[in-house]
Length: 242
Image 1 (cartoon, one colour):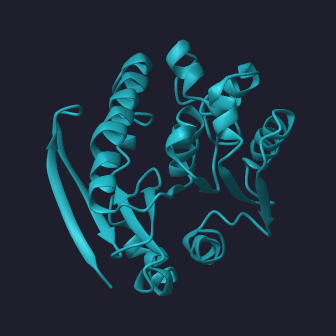
Image 2 (cartoon, rainbow, N blue to C red):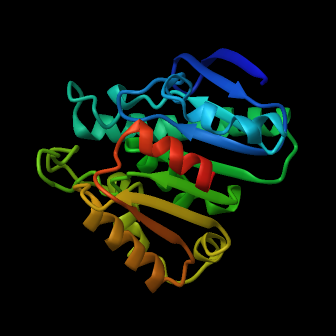
């Protein structure tokens, strides 16, 4: 299996950024790690191996990136406004550095976005905001409202709220989409979400599903047994849904 390590200095983030590429051809898959994960996380937990047959057959090519959670949503040493501002810079890095790199290396017309846990939020936020750039979203065990307080999970913005938080939170800005190109393009994206029936964000997933249905956006929500917020479940999900 082809495996490549890439690193460059990002002018938008003002720091070195790293990523791993797996596979040689096929649909491009942009992969966001979990909150504590790094760009090598999906290789370490076996998710890449669960897709080995598709990678070797030239059906998929994975681009596993850094998630920068410690500098954005979990950067609690920063003011919440700075956290969302840093996330906006991270989104610019994806749009203007990573996606052009992927396009230059692979001319396949399908780009998929995937993530687990916090990575699912990042993947969904990106696709819902820029649906014209993607063909498929695959999100596992996601929390799609970072202001939501559930069990031990707190509001990641500490009560702070502004337009940037609104427009980067899928369950906040989707109700405001009524007509226009963004909603039309979103209806063309294949959307697959999974969640465990014991996961604390089960209700949040059902709420997002209802919002999508209200907007006539086709999607799949697969509810797995238990919490399913773990690598062993994600490996099985990846083989089924990516």
